[in-house]
Image 1 (tube, one colour):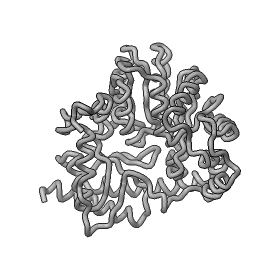
Image 2 (cartoon, one colour):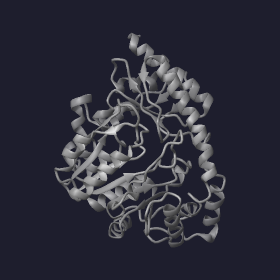
Image 3 (cartoon, one colour):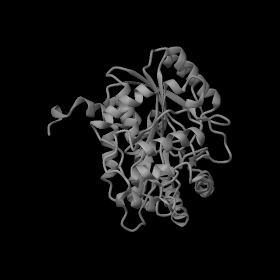
Length: 404
């Protein structure tokens, strides 16, 4: 297929403007990493996602799915999702998470929820505010839909919780955005925004009349007893906020392809229309797992947080102790985002780790200009395998630093 035949939406999706920083588009750089041969003499570990064998779903997950698939569940649910399941999920989102919701839409993964939400809000040329760095798929989708993206720097080198640059946020909000999107806890950094930051976003959204999309996929995976504020629970925000939720990460249910979104009623209806002509519905039998999500897994989640926090602490200890990285403990999520203290581009480091250590990581450029010089590591791994992986990471980056 010739280059001329590629739709402009897909060209934008590749983020060609990042060539100014990394010498090629984001998608071309990713293909370079994908095509790197894995070291044959090293155990392979993909540190871009959690090990769901070491951290499996709740024990009720498979029996619940099997029961639904054995005849008790509908094969063709409404596009928005099974009525009974939606009612239970809506109630639990209200009572367990404290997020005001009259209804929800069930989607094929939280990624599916992000897509149908953006498709239901944006027109080509709309301005969207996005933190830098933030989730790697968000800007791609925004550019695919023809949006103009204004990146708001995340200030990470501060005491306490990192901040969204308030002056940059105010200036960008004054330009008449249609939407602001942010992940909370932030993916890739694991940071949790301060209440002051959230209240500023809310105040600006009301003053300048824009919608807010809060990706709260990791909202239950919070460490050290930290407090967490659901954005839609702030005064006046329920009527202008889309909240993305789901069981894929904290509860290791990613293989069941389930996402949940809350939004004002009119917007939920538009999201249902988009879903009806794309994926149709979330997997019908899997939907029934959401009847137990939030309600029956609180003890499970508490245990998982304890295990993940130990892995997080070990990761921070090893990387900071190496002198090759500077990393802050994540407040939430299953990621750390270490800054490289060596003069080697993150793409080169990622390629070397795959080639020489058998470890796949996310180079920081995938998350925006603010991610350059960082790596994203998912520490939700088997403990023994992760200890060995950390040793290999330090060894390979040390060799790069020495020019070996």
